[in-house]
Length: 283
Image (cartoon, rainbow, N blue to C red; front, side, top):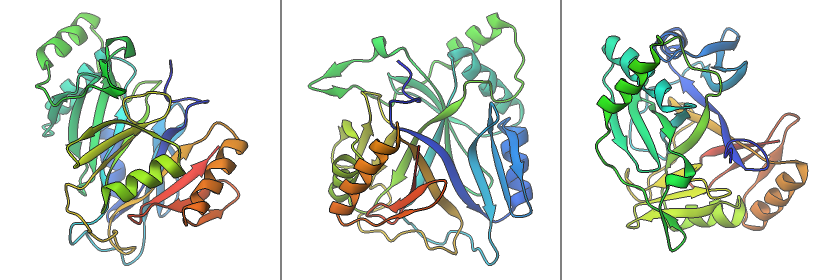
């Protein structure tokens, strides 16, 4: 099953407020290998297959992030296969980029930050048939990555890295929130996601249609932390894609019942979760 196409509700474009548009564009284009989809004086959209996955916006008077806020822990770029993960791992190593890594049982992942400190995961999924389930929860872990095995597979393919491959998508978004039960209520009762696994009252992983997670939520920055101020760099918004207008309208009705505001724009609708994180609801 493809967990990143309709009828599944899935994550899409992530918007970042940035301090240095030129430097950030260079990083996403040259270091990560995204294509420039569109460009204006204060905004660059980058992605693959002609589709934007990351939007960089420079705003006048923006300040660097000064404290611990709700917002982005990381956004996660999902590659089509293991071979592609090896190609970018080798490329990042050659570029001298510091990378963390982990085997999550459901996936194999690399971790890094962009020049302004926004967290990025780049990963590949194992086949869903390989995932383990118990009492409705999917087994996930933070095990060492078999980097040698990944690079061996890539070496056998004998292909050089040439940027983000076709079929790359926004796999999931992982967020710092201020109150986990409150966030869980909003994301399950409002947006309609299901809890796939929970980690000791510290983190929750939620998804639609039994993916391991489209949304991660954690309180690792602290409980009761404030929302990222408008004039500080970091997450601007992230996008959810719904199956159709009817599904989006149902979700909007539930959100309003919970007391959330939803504003309707021509190309997307917008809401804010209880931690002050902006979500664009698109079809």
